Image 1 (tube, one colour):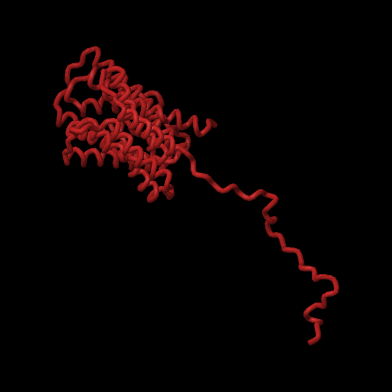
Image 2 (cartoon, rainbow, N blue to C red; image 1 turned 90 degrees about the vertical axis):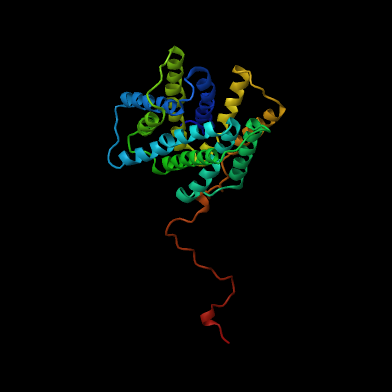
Length: 318
């Protein structure tokens, strides 16, 4: 069984890979096709994993997979892209970073996870750190974009908490669960993409390479690691890894796209990373009593022996 630190490190690769989405989209993919991009991320990955695992849902898991696929993929992607188009990238990232706060509330209601002061502090600090990284003085706000961003965060948070609550069927691994959700989410996005954006665009070699990366590495592997982490960690702990995505996007933009990265952004990264680490610290638990400290089951307490020379109460004279 891998250690908790190892599980956290592997799960963190998911939001780190998602942080490369912006650079891949702007440099390799057709412009102004966000829904088609979401479709190409989800459906090919889901179908490929279904072909690999050869396992379909049974019983209640047909509708559960549809619900989880809608929350984590089918609704999340369109709302996320709508926010990205209506808001500057920095504002959209800040709105999206409130996801851990949604998870804390939902985990309290649905999972019985008591929120700790450390988790709340980490969630608020993460939003502040991300805002330092991505916001600028000229950032504009759009009500529709802000609502879409909040709904996308709420959708992902609900999907994360329900994934934790429902678990998975006996004998079914996280890879199969990933296949079910990606396929369901992709099938939900498909009609919306074709109705809103029309026929698919012509794709060149760079676009095909970009879509292949997004589908296989960014989505199939990324969501498998994410769902695997949800199974082994608390929902709040997993969601507090989310700020690694905008941080990665900023680093990739600086290193590969020549975007500015000043002292304020560096401070914001430090704050966000510190918040992420703080959110992974497991709460202290009181050590259980040792076996030798516990009375044996069904034991009868020994009789009280009166001190020497004492007269029993029944025989005592007034």
